[in-house]
Length: 314
Image 1 (tube, rainbow, N blue to C red):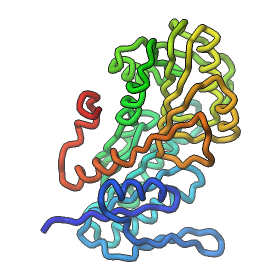
Image 2 (cartoon, rainbow, N blue to C red):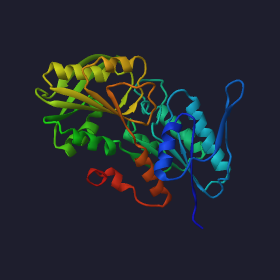
Image 3 (cartoon, rainbow, N blue to C red):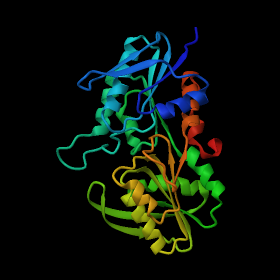
Image 4 (cartoon, rainbow, N blue to C red):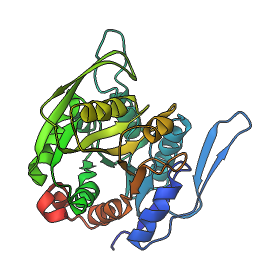
């Protein structure tokens, strides 16, 4: 007897889950997320899950209640005898804490992986992890999708005459190089030094951008300070225009104001995170269709390898 698919969502990512469900052609399931008077979260499914493939869609950005909602829903689905419980996490929070970069600190990404597996997740679907090696923190299959599937076609249709891809830091070089290789463009790199998190002390440019149309590539824009400084440096070195690609628009502190007042022509983001407000310089491209397709392939036990090949996904 074939298993059925049921899609659910936590409160934080309902805006995206509704789009994924529409692309999939199936309404979201019924669940209740309630709170006790002290703020403690409680979740319950209002329909049978027995023998079904359950996909729970929730990004794990702040506050921590979003993580607790997901963990409780995964646990509840497992206890309700679901065939498999798949955590669909468009933005995997705590991914920036993927290693010990100084003594006596936690590895937050590994802790999140342990919690999800302890809750009963049988699979993870996510997008643009801050560090690829986080996939190895899980003892269950991880489908790691790339937002390039939605960003590259947009960049191509801009027909920028002197395109150059750029990484705002050395850590993102591999990501920017993949774009540059496919788009047959040059690559430049920004080298930055930080005194502490979210504050850039010094930045230098490696490469030539004079007369070029630069596209900066990053997975996360948090406060916006790095990307804005990088854009200013590109213009100072003679770039014609500067755009930025960002998968996860965290946009904390005064990021919106920094971007609005910057030399950036445009910032392309996906909808893995909800925007707190609109900005004329921010363009949102939806990843809903991509996630819907992968959910269908996972349910039907089909290969998703085509999603990792530029030539077949564009």
